[in-house]
Image (cartoon, rainbow, N blue to C red; front, side):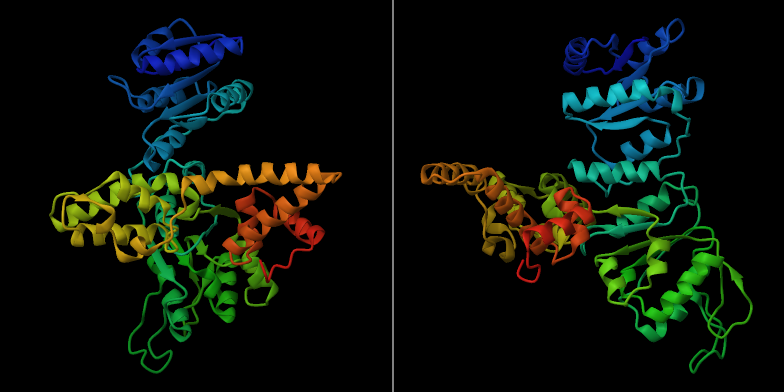
Length: 466
């Protein structure tokens, strides 16, 4: 078996890999720079490569580009401490096998290396065409999954459905999918189905001919024509009127549409990306959304996590938004004290990332000093109930006390009964969190929707009271 190569200018990272790979009896060689590895390639070939993305001298991306061009069958795992979308997309578009964000779990990294070694013959090369999207940041695993998905979709024209709560950044994901696609040089057009009156939405989408209706004094080009060759983002697709859904389905199926009042078919060369905060499966059951359109749009689904599901990203995002606001306002960047940052992190953010951005703008304008204390935060944060670390950890003590109580009482089969109580509580809380939406609740729990439905029936859960 050929060795695994680890390339990183950080000696401590190399040491971690050396110990872990030795423990797993995986032959390996480490390099302090990509230049050293390139020299070794003249006489030796690795089974797989783990390479840092940013190093002095030769960068990880340029090394990846060369490997993809010369030895496409050797998988390269790119790792980086820079948790932005650009790194992930550039890695995948450059032909990376996988993207590993620092800090990483050692066991996960070893499992990834083993998979790369096993699948090296099935890899195919890609080419690097990445561009920066600094407004999308995230170190949370859920966001890393989103970054990876965008990277994998970078050469695809597949229709994508983005789900997530209002304010979670669905349009940012749609724009990223466009920027990192073969259609990047063409137009990105966004339209919010819920923000346009029903009577005007058809004309907005497809345009109209002069005289098509009262007030149509001139021909109008619709959003489909504006997005020709590019991407059309249909936000809040769940609110689209039913009759207009039929027209949209026909365009997606046939590739042609008619302007309102027109008789000449117009070819549509447009990639459609849809988004919704609603459970479209429930909308289909309620006969409010066409099932055939749902399946046509739901080719690839990307779920964007709510901000409360990625609290570890709040400090990173807050610093970014404070810097952005300061630049726009022409003022010095405000800095949050540790106490203020902790209070911000504990807030539940019903408005998600958009609300955090607005709060950071408020702080830049209204906070009196450069160092922002807890009392300087907006009123809704100061009044919000906080969850202490002690309360978060007390559930284990409560569980132990309950087990002891049942044992002393002489109960039998306590694991079965307590497991049912545990599952019922978790399911009820997940359903309450998602407003009863089973798809989103099942994703939060890490189950499939059918599993959640079966558990609800087995446990006799009343979803209306959950």
